[in-house]
Image (cartoon, rainbow, N blue to C red; front, side):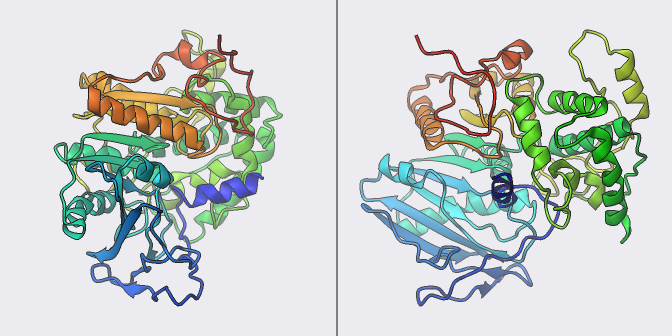
Length: 464
């Protein structure tokens, strides 16, 4: 089960290894992938075909448009009873292969049922290229107007995982283009994600007593040296169960770096440490394959190392003052200095200012240790700094996977967002910056709909 769920994770966001091009089954309706007109060496898969080779067809009561624009495939679906509104959907990370493909949003049926048209792009590139995702997603608004021969009255931007990062940047770069936004499981803290990957690995090494390095230009042998170092770290921490004192301390540190003391963390920690990491390091526990030092901290696209922990104070308790053991850990941990920052435009890893001009409603699994719950807190903090807290609603979901949401959770959120846009009435959310609220055993109960089987915590209180 864990390996199956981890495979889903691979398709969604951040790895540092190449992903193969999607396999296309032979079918008369499918054209061969076409050479990109904008990206040398890239191919664009037929947008009229799904990844499994079956044709992409309209839902009952709707019509579809497909095509390729500036090296990116697109799909558009318009209900016959269209309400004049459009959702632009941004997909997550798809590895570093050289075939791009477009697919459907998870809320496709709900959009059409509610009268919303939707549009989605493959993006012209793969990799963690948020800037290209923004450009191609925003371009869909004009593509829609041209192929549907009508202008949308309002547009909602939405996306998952890396697509959440695309969403957050798009609404800041083009504030007048959108009426609302719904990122989920999103990288709303830009380079703070890579700081978290750094934090998890350097504290594990320090607690295990294993000396490690952070090469800005890894040599050909570094990946194997890291594998050997992790081979000493894992037994010292007693992973995956964290059965040693050092392992239990590491669990407490990761909990605080990923969002704070909260229900269900033990099950999340066990889940992610039992899951294999991303190829070519699938023989390691999940987080160890994400160590930024493996690619010089560039995330494969930034002009230098974006991870930094020079001023980070690592805690394993919530006491007012650090304990002696905590100070000892902070003295031993490897310190890394960034050489590149989040980009204020669309280059490298684009910066998320957290300064929305429109309603933003987001969801996040509190047990997600790939793109952690702390991403919501980062955005909420930035929004508060800009005086925009009223324009951000965050909802905590009691799941441990990455983008592990039920349809009722997503449809309720979308309906609440569209009601907010229409009426100006801000919907309810969770107090993600209130440490006591997050630590409450019932945290996440309010908006969780249905069972998340791998999440283990005290049951939610029965409704009165």
